[in-house]
Length: 332
Image (cartoon, rainbow, N blue to C red; front, side, top):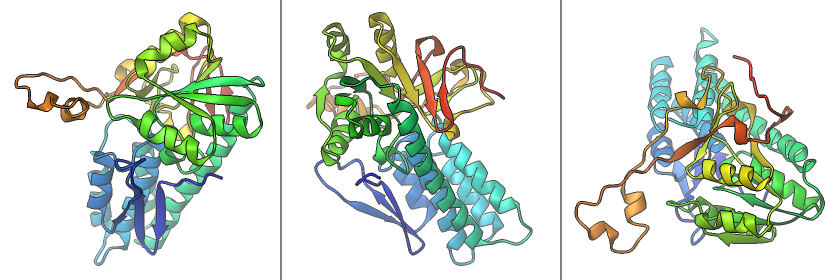
């Protein structure tokens, strides 16, 4: 298992590792009500599609355990959490599961909802281990790999998705080292992936996002692993903004590009990536990244948080159920 965890359930409260402060400071947020969980999701204190789903499950459990809680108050909590972030499917999958648990009995039971939230957490941890095993089998001995954004323990309930595969491959002495993109504008790769690799003693080299083509041209990496926030029936995949460019470059240089995600990331209602709603975030995420830029008047900013990688650029999609290869055609 990993030495890192983003979420802890303690005595009816959710402890959230504030990822906005990493790697400089380790601080835990104590969430005693659903609003605290919702704001933590919206403001990226907790992020990563699987971790967001898990946090939302616990948020519903907190609402169920509140004084004078009822079916209606818990349903209101579910609706509050539903509007936190629009792109990652794990959030909606987890909330549907908690809602089904709520509606599945004529008698309201906070205990049952807590048990369901814990089950979502454990199942994700188990899925991470399985994805790690399946993905590591694809790696040849001595490969260096590239990853984008953060897909490790901080983003999940276990060892991670793409970074979980890398961690498993390194433990098996197959991965020589990992290159991590900084992942602008919020820097999840520079701040979080690098921090996780250091914690797990995995050799890591940080690069700027615009260095990927040079890295691949120099043949410094042999494989790419990324995560996903939503996967449609045809295999199109949304992930952190910039992922599509990495996939296109990998295709150009003949480097395998793998998506690693649990089955809870699959949205069977969407036929293709054209139907995925892409979250747009506040301008200050970009403006504050360059000193003094916020003081310039009239600067317009476009800040989509995700992009869509077409299935044609994806070598395989790795889930806890196995390795899926094109042509993709996931069931509705």
